[in-house]
Image 1: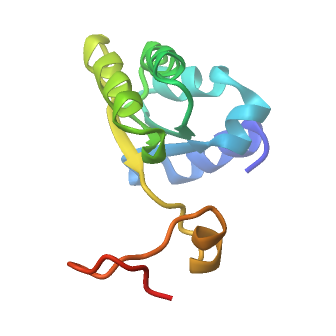
Image 2 (image 1 turned 120 degrees about the horizontal axis):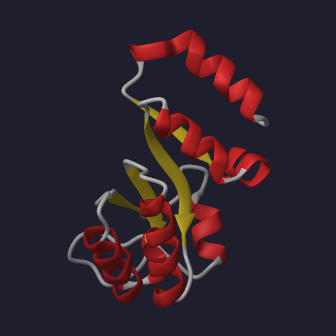
Length: 132
């Protein structure tokens, strides 16, 4: 989805048949936080799927900004490490909105070859060597 108008038409057609509306990177980049504000002010719950991944302070600031938009939930990328994840969770819990923070571990489009390319190998339970 590339525009707020297209998103608003979809929301109008779905109405209350959906509990939460997801806004991803493409739509958020094209339309910005105004669309989130519009959906929230119309009584909709928003799932902001931006997969934040940066230094802990930057992610915490982004989570606070998302919380200020009153999103219901948002995503961070777990590969940012425990300090980043903790900073995101603390920022969310300190906000009035208290959005749920979901950690994405591996993108669904990632294949074994992609993981190997970035130095991540699958391991068997209890084994110390990667599986092919």
